[in-house]
Length: 108
Image (cartoon, rainbow, N blue to C red; front, side, top):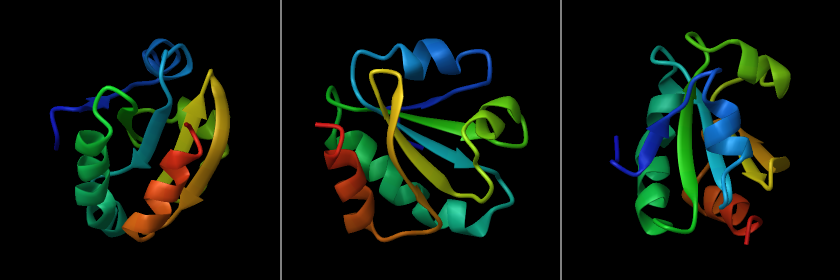
C-alpha cells in the first residue's frame, strides 16, 4: 500500500475525510475481497498521481461497520468521493482505471 494512503476508522472518518481541506477518495474494502485486492494497485497509483490534491483513504468494512452503514455501502469494493464533507459520487465493484480517474476528476 502506498505511503499516500491513510487507513481510516469509524472514529477518525469525520476528521480525516469529512473535514478534509481537499477532496477525499474513500475505498471501502475487506481483506477477503478479491475484487478489492484487484483494484488496490489502481487506488495506490491514484494516491501517488494526485499527491497534495486528493486524500486517499481505506476503510476496512469488517473492522469499521458504522461508516459503511451510514453511507449505504452494500457491496465492496465501493469507492466514494467526498468534497467539503459531502458525497460527490461513487463507484461499486472492480472498475477499470479510467472510471476511477473520471470519479476523481469530479472533485476538482
